[in-house]
Every structure is written in structure tokens, then in C-alpha cells.
Image 1 (cartoon, rainbow, N blue to C red):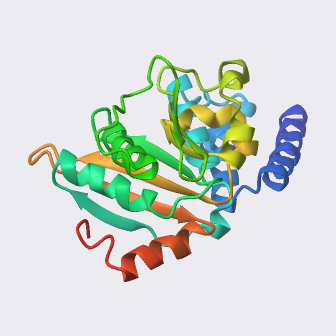
Image 2 (image 1 turned 30 degrees about the vertical axis):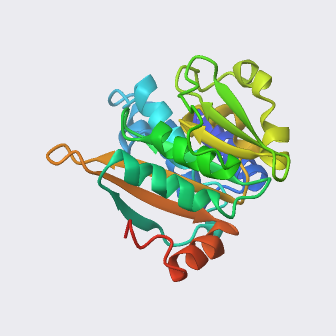
Length: 246
């Protein structure tokens, strides 16, 4: 029992350091603690009464992802929910968000396969580079496609991290993420693969979570703004740029 309490003390110390270093919310810390402790039977297991609950590898990954995506939640504002009824509307949503985009903008796209992440990216890139017929495809195998905006000499990086693991910085190093996120415009599909790189997740970002209505095939998106994205979304909404989707 003494060694068990020593283990708990050490873990609490480590998690508190993670919270300070990564700006994790209280919810994130709680989830991480639950990941290791399981449930109340852990204490009983330490005393030899019964077997402790141990989450599976998939469950541990899901908990860590849910926790680490709450980095800087003190800057998270109310989510905006939008409805996308067609591929053309999805592209229009991407175009609407591209109009005022600047270097340093980061957009995370998550959700089910086939939910429209690449379609959104196509609309964004075409609007930003001012090329309505530009070929924009999924970079699943290349990991990243780069587009140059000649009007202001800005690069747009469209990344798809789906085929990467979530615990290898070596796989992400060729993408040069710290520089790209700071100096370019980034659209990143499957940001859940960044669990090993949470220290570079920017405070200013927009997260979109896409869902598919299985009955109607209509797509819905939850837009969660962090940092200055809250003000930007408010301006777009006040200007009527998002009326088509709300």
C-alpha cells in the first residue's frame, strides 16, 4: 500500500508539471488522472481485493486526445454550429473563412471519413490563391500540399495526417510544423495525430468537427474558435458571410 501511495504522489506531481507546461485545463488533468487510475477499484486492487480496471490502448488514446485538445481552453469561446447541405456549400464555407486569412492562421479539421474535410480545404485554397479552377486534392499520401498565393506571397499548407501514428515526432519532422504554423497558413486534417507535439499547438486556432447525418447525408460542423478566431468569426457572422450556413 505504501508503494501505491508513493506512485500516486509521483503521478500527481508529474501531471501538475504537464498542466503548467502545456496549459492544460482542469478537465484535461482530471481525464489524464482517470486514465491511469481507472476507477475506484484501483485502491482495492492495491490492497489485493480485486483486479483493477485497465483501459485498453484505444481507450487510453481516446482519453489522451480528448484531454490534450483542451490546451488553452481559457481562450476557447462558444462554438458555432453550421449546416452544410452539399459539396458546393462545403467549398463555400472554406472560401468564406479564407477571405481574411493571414500568415499564422491554423485550422484543424476533424470528423468522420468522407465528412468533407478535403472539400472544405479545396474551397479555402481556391479562394486564398484566387484560382477558382485550381486542382486541390487530398494529401493523404504526400502528407502535405503547398499552394502559393502570388498576391501577397503567402504559402498555404494543406496537410492530411491520417496515415501517421500519434506518438512519433520523427514522422512529423519533415512537415516543419513549428515554422509552417508561424509563417504560413495551415489547414490540418486529422489533428489528433499531433498528440506527441502538443507543445506547438497554437493558442490562436480554429477547430472544425464535421459530422454526417446518416439519414439525410447532410453535413454539420462545430466551429470552435480559440484566441483571435473568436473575434474573426463574430465579424464574419455580423457581416452576413456565414448566413448561408447558420
